[in-house]
Length: 91
Image 1 (cartoon, rainbow, N blue to C red):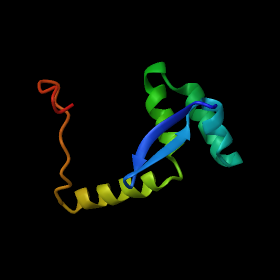
Image 2: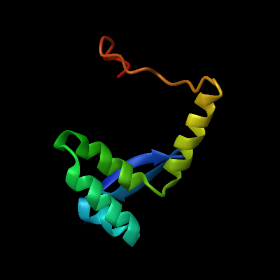
Image 3: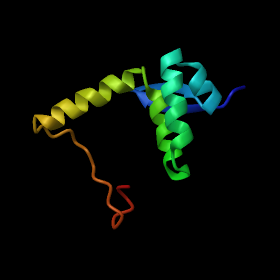
């Protein structure tokens, strides 16, 4: 079985490609070219976040994020919990 990433999108468990090759294989030719350019020039520290972002591209997670950012820009409270290193119970 291929490696997968698991996350919740819209309250549903979703499995995403879990290898660089599988993430790339799910893309159009243009997306794959952009992916290759970005990934090969990233620092190792930035690689995990970029891979997750690319794996989530084109999923309903993009729409959820856009909706949250729109609400934030209007000044709405989205019930977010700030990450606080002094309070590990929240992080």
